[in-house]
Each structure stands twice: as C-alpha cells, then as structure tokens.
Image (cartoon, rainbow, N blue to C red; front, side, top):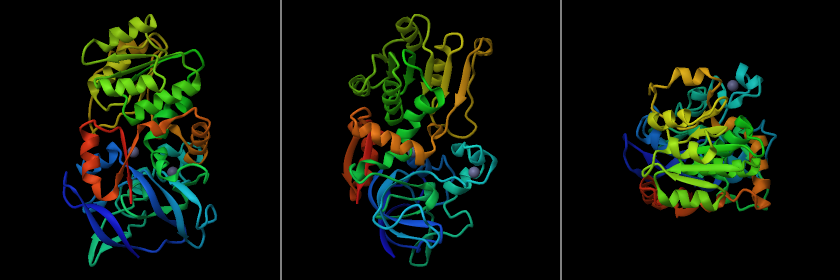
Length: 364
Ligand SMILES: [Zn+2]
Ligand SMILES: [Zn+2]
C-alpha cells in the first residue's frame, strides 16, 4: 500500500517526507494506522548512526494507532482495536523464557536490523529498498507494520495520540523505579537528568510513595517541570556540586539514584552520591564502547550499579497499568507532550534538541 513516511537518507541528515510502498502484513504482523508517534533520543542516535542501522531508513518507535489489518495467525488484536506499539522480543530465548523480555538475546535483530528477522524489508520507494522495522514499527509514517508481540491493546477511553511514548521513554523511566528498584514508600531517590525518561521516573517515584525525590539537571525549566510533577527537591548541577547537594538533602545519600543522561561524568556522580547499600540504576544510552571510571572501594561497600533496559517492563502488562494510573490522575505524563503536524518533523526534532520541548509527538 502507499504510505507517507519520514526517510533519513544520510548520516545526521534531515527527515524527508516521502511517498513509499509498505508490504502487506505477514501472518504474525499487524498493520497500524498511526495516530501519534513520539520522538525519542534513540531515533536521533539512529539518524546519527550511533546505532549502526542501514540507511535510507524510516525511524520512529513510539507509535500508537488503530489496527487496520492483521495477518492470518494474529489473535491478540483485530481491526479497529486501539494499540500502543513497543519494542519486539522473540519469546523463545532464555531471557524471554525467564520473563526478562527487555534482555531478549535477539533484541538487536528484532529491533535494529532495518528489516524483518528473516532479512526481508517492508518498505520501498519504487525500486529502491528503504529500511524499516525500526523497533519493529518505523512509526514516523501514517501507517506502520508491527508484530503481534509488540502491539499492546489499550482502552478506547484514553486519547490514543498520546500513548506512543508509553512504549519506550515513559515505561523506561517509570519502570526503572516501579519494576527494577521497587522503591518502597518513604524511600529517597535522586534522578540525574529530567527529560522524558527522568520525569517519568519522578512520576514513578510518586506512585511508589518515595518521600524524597530529587531532580538533578542543568535546565531550569526541566527542574521546574519535575517539581510540578512531584519532585520534592531540585538541584541545578550547573550551579552547584550535585553530589554534595543531594547528600546534604538526604543526610548522607539517597537509597536510589538513576542516571538518565548517558554521560560518564553524570554516571560517576550518580554512583558517588550513594550511601552504603544504595542502588544506582543506569538508563542513559551511550555510544558503544563508552567507558567510565568508578570508585571500586565505594562499590565494594554494598553499593549496586544496575543497567536497566526499557524499565524491565513487559509492555503487555505494564502499559495498561500506567494508563490506569493516568486515568486516575496519578500519572500525568501528558504534561510532557507537545504535538506537531507530521510534516513538521524537522522542527520537532530541532525543538527537542534545543530543549524547547520534552516529548514531541507527531500527528499524521
Ligand atoms: Zn528473546
Ligand atoms: Zn525510545
């Protein structure tokens, strides 16, 4: 079928809106008419080839929409259902069998190869192959092809166009606190970097009943937003030493810290700030082979450093929970969102890169 999609032709190039041809769904695939697609830093990392995905390619991995058509073997959803799209996992490897889908051994092939796992591609422009299947969706388009495994059926009572980021940034931040750290009521947490992931962690910390929630960032407007959404303290790391400031606030260090920036110096701060038995979760995405130096003696004394993918969430279980919290007014993630017409994707990206918007969502 003919679709409209945003194509990146060269490393760090602009997104170009093109008319493309999209394949029919295979037996286990689901065709989705996109209602909204969030832009995430991982899309830009792919554009800049920090993730080596073949170009030209269509990115976009925070899509939500209406099921248009399903493959012969699909039973989970049917045409007309509302779905949020997430990342794909194989369901068959040792990680998936253990219920640790975010650590699927086939994660790269299923989400970052630019094609289906069998190597076939889904997008063309005439005779030219355009790579897709990004996070098994490529949702910077008016239609996207997902797999039965990475569509999550959602309530029709919630505005569909805001739900895409649930599948990545939102569940990453909230899930780190709610699923991985399982922060207990009354505990303290310091969140380094309050973009989409960090603010979602703030929201998750509120849900968990953390009584000290410290947002650390260098952008005053983000700190203000974090405060409005439940941070009890803010630290401007551009103006004061964040390690000392957080230790002063907590009287020796928080139970938990999260690194949501993807910066070795910030990661070091998030570890250095911990007291005995404190846990630091690492969420920030960095280029492959990035190294960091840490104080071994400090970690020896009962501290934990834990890398976290996609908030340790099983999207089918976790996204409906977050939506329920949202409808109850206890998870107001929509405050992060600003809408852009699909044709203004380059402006949306620029606004995000300049820090003028936290979570842009494109509407076809
Ligand atoms: Zn797997
Ligand atoms: Zn993402």
